[in-house]
Amino acid sequence: MPAKTGTSHALAAFVSLVVGSMLSKYVWTYTPPLAEAGATIGRQLEPLIGAPLSQEVTGGLVLILALSFVWGVVYHLGRHG
Image (cartoon, rainbow, N blue to C red):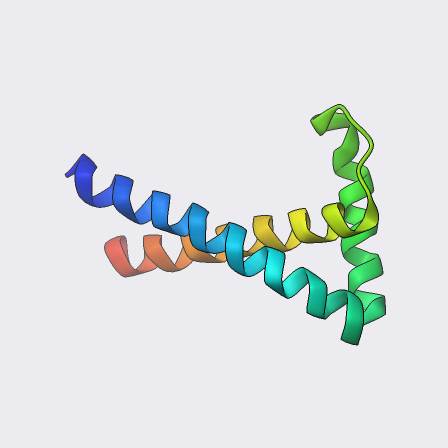
């Protein structure tokens, strides 16, 4: 059982990191208001991280967190719903 769920979570983390980083570039290019909203949320997360981050990094971080959350919900509903 742990091997199945561990693999899914590891894959989710990796895919979220790669896709979130790639999407961040396009979001900043094509939808600046959405990117600024992500940067604003990211600035709120800076105290938790403990270091100031650039706007691109905070926007990417917000996208990665959102993708991870969606992946978790879909996984939970698929497995238990």
